[in-house]
Image (tube, rainbow, N blue to C red; front, side, top):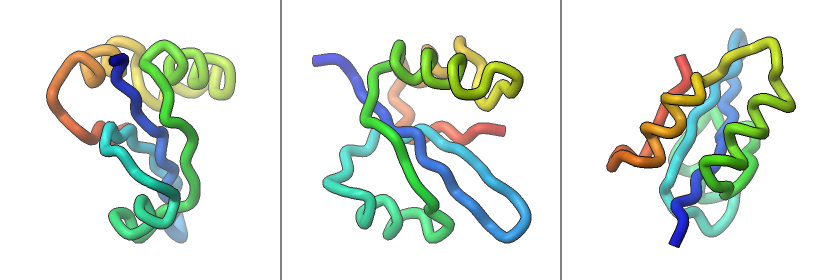
Length: 83
């Protein structure tokens, strides 16, 4: 079975952050319980779908390098924070 992850958007008063999570969530309420600054999420998607999403939606902003996304999917970490 192919690994899937969600892109989670977090927002505070002065910034917006993104993370990827492989944790299986039933719905957005469960994600919001884990992340108090939760704004929204997309997915769960495959590695290729997430890479394509970032390339299409944010062509001039590198939230996460493609190789970092690939390494995340290949590794055992459950969460990857965009820096």
